[in-house]
Length: 261
View 1 (cartoon, rainbow, N blue to C red):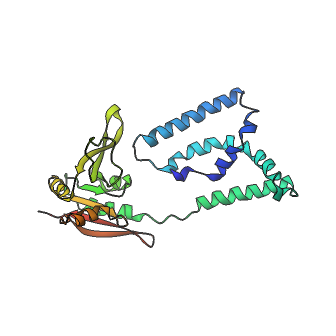
View 2: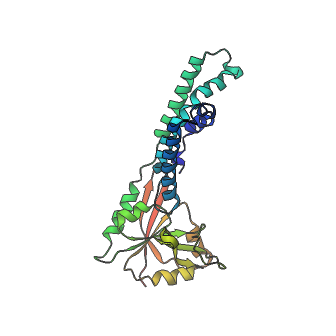
View 3: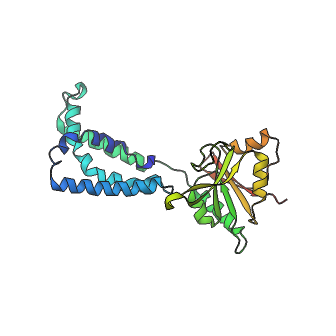
């Protein structure tokens, strides 16, 4: 969601209130507010409904806010001109510096390097290759990226060690939870608990009881909380490592497959 946060737009919006007073009672502005409300409500509804959604999909809201933010440009110039450091600087020079700052900040955000995520397709291709005809594999992932589910064609389940589903039974907190995207109350898609795990032995029992011929586990190597549970309880880890994937220079992910009984 932070992808859709543009500091320059926020600053200009903060200074736009005075300019908006000149148009707030016009029918055009009221129509624009209705349009902005519809765009924002539709995007936010989908974002918080539990559907796979990335922050960049909120960009239309930012774009719709630009006409309002534009009202803040002159007010920002006036504010800066009243500062002691800009007392002897002409308004035109201040405006030029502000434009340069806006372009620099937005260009820096746009050009910020994001490591290649080729691993998403690589791990998905490996899981897809291992599936038996007509029998989809199960992929339990500690990495919440639904693109893996899309590319792999596997039955995707999310492994959660800390933030459990709101549908978790009250009164007994699991040590970890495996949830599956499904329709909840009201017909909305949400993560529903498939397995509430109360210990390493409980996990072993439930995962071996899964009828899929191939069960995979995908983990971010920086988070060892899941493996730590087995070490603390001195239980055998029911998976074998089959592949390691890299993102950038240091970040790695590991794919495991269930060990046959």
